[in-house]
Image (cartoon, rainbow, N blue to C red):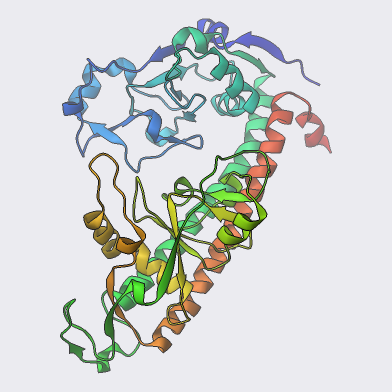
Length: 421
């Protein structure tokens, strides 16, 4: 087996004349310098699962980048969040070269003559490394990293060909995960677009022969009626308890588990202790729709897998009183931009918005005929079934990758032997 070398990031940095530096200070880059157009500036919030997420990324003009050119990122750099969620880091891809390391981040630029960037990226993702770095962080209220801490990180690495082989194995899993996640987003978009086409724009099958008639909501197809959500559903506030990462009791669904995607990744949901009586009262079942009532009111989730779970107090469960509204129709009704705008306008509170069960169910909407709801449910179920299968694949791929990662990066698995197997 090839000999592995022990060093620190600082040792490697000095040997290759690299850089380990903080991003620009707030005095160098002001809030007024950011704009909707321009060159992306990577902040800690933009580092998600080892990648740079551009969904809400800030930008600056090329003039600011030129002024702060020492903070420009190069392909193969690692950008590291230095505040709050310690251990959050991402590898800069070729298409991201020229972007800026933002305030609150640090840049590691070591080239690839000694340590291959993708290998280092995975090395720093190990749970043991994240724990080690977290222990070194300074600050009582908000942990912070500095260049001295990053330079002191101990690393162990084999010759470059072995590094590339290890990184290639792990990146193959990430590529499969990303491919599945892209397909999940497409399926989400297809189901959402179908709902809008049929029930917002009223372009449902056979709509050409259905005249429009006046209603309190404007013109709607003849045969539809305007009713309130409360006419069809019951509401229940969630259960109050502390979370536990250990499998003690059922899964404990929180607002943060449903406020970013249209699906629930149960592998990321913690547990909670609960009595048998409360367990029965708050147990979730397939088809349950849940809505956030505080902090981010109006965000909606739906239970699509059989799972032993209850829901937290910041959530309200919406359950049909009878089968007039199907689960996916109800979900997409409440997931629509129109419903979210209604909740946003109806929520109360200045510092923390909230919406009561009464407000959440007071929403008026145009109720389509039962046969159209049934057709939509069938089509939406096909999309969501595929989505759920892909989500399970992602969970399994992550689990396998995370099992392999420490074994490969410690040399416990000899990749040279794998090449000759």
